[in-house]
Length: 386
Image 1: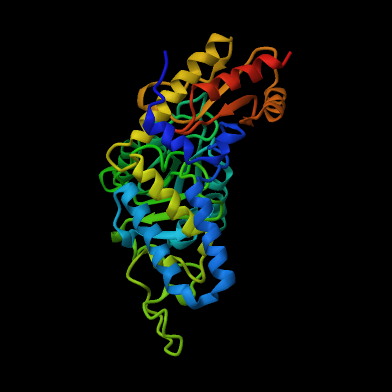
Image 2 (image 1 turned 180 degrees about the vertical axis):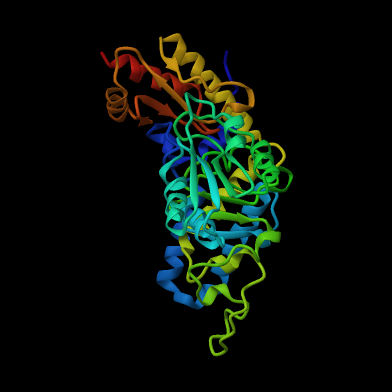
């Protein structure tokens, strides 16, 4: 089995300066920046130093371009996108913004990343029951999730892709489980957004949050929050500030009328360089085929990970079994018998190969620009550990 390194993906690879030094397999943790993104941030810094707020309107227009690109990526309306600091920020907008009542309950999985657990667990202080569904093995049991939902369930929250196992759920299927129970559906999309296609309207997602610093190839501290427009009145803003209101540029008139869009959740001054950088990254992904209905980038990532799995198994590695059809993702967790994942990672750091360790597993998470030569360097790293 091989995969193509045609001119399209060679061009994408050339846009990633990290390839000059590293075989980089850690996009599920923190992605390296594309050259265009780094340049956009540098340009902002130069303008801020040389012009101050003289060019503030230019920055504002650039931020709106980021909002537009994020909406385009997931099939949303611009008015349904808030630009936030990270995934946690978006989760807390929902956790703290819904009007919970004692006796309400919400449903989450037990193997979620902490950011998709702590904000929900905090709602116990309001009398909300948090139903944590254990995940035995790799695949979440949708029947157990459905059985946990009842007439008092207000919300079901789940990750699109498991950060540990790489298991990718079908958001539309899980949203249906929530809605059948009369509950809302929240999708933590950080491990899939930017790579795999997602149409939030077709999938009937109510809320979504994702930081840009993983698969979207953006800087840290700049992310995307989606809220279905019909739910704006139900999700109360928190962290209210000048930027939350309709008359946000009229400082002399105090009128607490919220903006008629998800921008009401943005509160105050924003991370200008980060969000401008995120916009550059989103534009690059859209240029190379990311989108809500189909994603050439997602297809490429699956080609790369399928090849990586084949090569890893050829040298005796044991793959965590999450490589079934549409349940595959860009995350591959594996073990090499007799070799600790910590030792493997330490060898990789010395040999210019970057990946993570999660629990008892080494975890690689390649992007569309990775090639067969990168995977060969990974295999050489594994062989170097006694």
